[in-house]
Image (cartoon, rainbow, N blue to C red; front, top):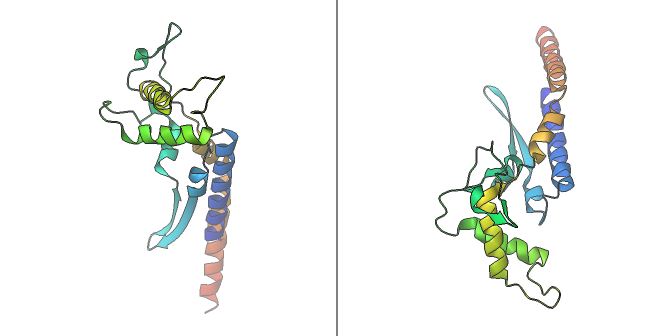
Length: 178
């Protein structure tokens, strides 16, 4: 019974996480949603329930601290830290790592490098501006997984306790009927 309840919990958490991801507009290509899954395994100590998603899902959920938000100035306003409490942060700024490449793919998917009002903005210019803004201000936390976890774990203690009790009762009756 416990395994059944843990599987139900895993399935519900995956459903709630994917639903939140879509509702918050964080599922652009679908790759992150497709990667969300769980696995239930048993070992000599009991059950292990693990949840998986692409690495950048954790950054989307918790946000990422920017490097130097005050270095961004737009229309006389200074940039702001979008995830001040995140455990993740952008590095020293050396190199053009995966953020640069990811932004490029995102620009293409969104069609942002097309001609607007007869003017053309190069993809390099858009990529540079977006990468600089994200690097310095960070990524705001969406909590798509955190909120799903909170919702799914409500009343889980009672459900798991009932399942354990059923398993113990079943084992007891099996033992006395041997």
